[in-house]
Each structure stands twice: as structure tokens, then as C-alpha cells.
Image (tube, rainbow, N blue to C red):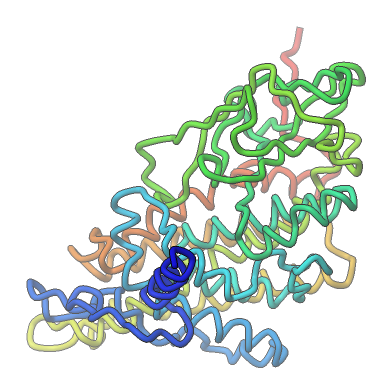
Length: 443
């Protein structure tokens, strides 16, 4: 009887879950969830996310049917399930755990990984998913990026067969969440100088050190940790499981960007992991590039998603909002800004698309990836700032998405290589001279 009662309760919860297929019980949407603010009825909020109107050059024609299908499926989900509720989570700096079950049904985790329950999608199909998620919420796109294109990808590319079989199927279903611990308090841009150590002991390794800014870090079940081998002085990678003795993770508070992402400060004090936890495909810091080559392409697409989301919201707003007896969209200055935003978005999309194709062809260089990531984040800043101007006072309210994206893009601008570091990587490729380290002072 108790077992049957639990089954009935589980079924009821699934009916109440947002976006669940075949839901027998639905929530009655509030006015706010439908994008209607009784205090400002002149324009809809982003809770009722607008139609996509940002494709001025028929860029859709560059996609395959599979890629369009992924884009449309993710767009539909984000508009129906995430847009109505995400602002409250962002304001509270909380992750929307209630969405994970329905989000998992999109079958995106694992991205381009082949087998182990992963979708093995093309680079552009992955990119379209990232764009559509970031279009509505940048935090959710970062959650997927860290889980899929960092943690899962590292295991898929560099892990043992045992690690792949044990972890990837559960991570593909989001039964396990993943994170990627590289950055440290003492080493951000200078990541190769990491100080976390791994000391060989009988049967395994002992990790000691600190990590910072680890996305998903407060709750991930699978933590990929990069540490320096105390014997060889080379960087190795290890899998640490949630709750391991000697491992602690604490949420970083008071962020203004990606507030739903639970970033952590991590401490490893005599944290033992067995030999089976070491990733055999990692012999030095250079092996991080095998992962970052793909993840940086996805990071270059994230600003495209944020920019198109802002444009779509602003496009609807300037038609609904009136001043001086006419819609804002009828003013020349507004149209100039809208045209500038739209043109920049087309260029951002095409830059990221070309980078993706170069990767698929095996011809992408790290310098190209850095160039595009730096450029799309910089241009996104401009697009979002123009959108903030056009919404006037509502441009500083998270209800209209623009203010939220205005803050979130600052994280894109800084992570996976700051703008300055990425342009210097590109500059090194152009000149053959590295300017990343300051020149030695003349004697």
C-alpha cells in the first residue's frame, strides 16, 4: 500500500511539473506570468517572451533541418517554461531546480559526445541550443555550458572507459550535475600557474588547494578538478564526488551577473580520491585546450543569444509603448538604434557560425576562437546597452529581460578568458609575438 501511495504521489508531482508531457493538471497563470503588469499596462514584460524577429538576412537558410529542429524545440521550451518564472529566481540568486526534470527532456546534455546516452549533435545544433537558452536566460545557458561542454566533455574526451560508462549516462539525464574546477583565487587569467596540488599516496591521490568561481559548484555531484602533480609538476585532472571527505564548496554571494548560477569557492584539504578518479587522458595543462576549443565556441555563441533576446524584446516594446501620442518605434532616433542593433546581431551570428564551421572542418585555431569570443562579447555589450536606452526606465527592470541581460553579459565578457586576454591571444597569432606578460624592465 505504501509503495502504491508513493507511486501516486510521484505521478501527481510529475503532472504539476512545468513543461511535463501529458500534464493532467496545469497551473493557472498569473497576470505577471502572462507578461501583464497592472501597474504598467502599456507594454508586455518578458514573462510573455516575444516572437523571434532578429533574422534580417535569412540566416535560417544556413542551418540544416536537424539544426532548425533543435533550435525550434529549445525555443518553444524556453518561452513556455523558463520565461514566465526565471526573473524571480534571478532576483533571489537561486537556481530553478524545479525546471531540471523538464529541461533534461530536451536531450541536450553531452552535446557532441558520441554514445553513453549523449545526443552527438553537430556543432551548429549545439550552438542553436545555446543561443535559444541565452535568448531567454543567460544563467540557464551557463548551467548547460558548464555541465555539458566542460564537465561532460572532459570526461568524454579524456576520461577512462570506466568513468565514461559510470558517469556520462547519468549526466546526460541530469541525474548527476557536473562542474569544472580550474580557476583559483590566486590564478584567474593565468590559469596555467594553478597551485592546487595532487600528491600520490597508496591507492590514490590527495588533493590540497582552493578553487574559485566554479559554476554549479555548490550542488554538482561530479566535480572535474585540475591539480598539479607534486611529483611531475604537470597538471592532471581528477573526478571528485559531492560529499567527499576534505572537500567543501561555499556559494559566492552578491553577484550582479548570472545570478541563478551557483558559483562556488572550493576548498580541498587532504581530499583523497582513488586512482580510478584520475582522468588518464590528461598529462599536462595543454590538455585543457582539447576541451576549451569546443567550449569557447559555445561561449562565443552565448552573447549572440543574449543579444537576440534583447532585440526581440525591444522590437515589441517600441511598437507597444507610446509617447507624445505615437509609438516609440516611429521616432528616427529609435529606428537608428534598432537598425544598428540588428546589423550588429547579423555580424555576430555570422562570425560565430564561421568559427563553428572551421571547427567542424578541423581548421579552427585557438587564435580564431579567442578572436571571435572577444568580439561577440564586446558587440553584445553594445547591443544590450542600446536596448537598455530604448526601454528608458523599464530598461533597469529585470521584468523586461534587458536589465538582466545587461548584467549577465558582464560575466560572458570575463569568463573563459577575459576580453583582453582573448584579444592578446589573437594578437599573438597575428604578430607571432606574445604580449600577455609585461615586458621585463630595462636595467
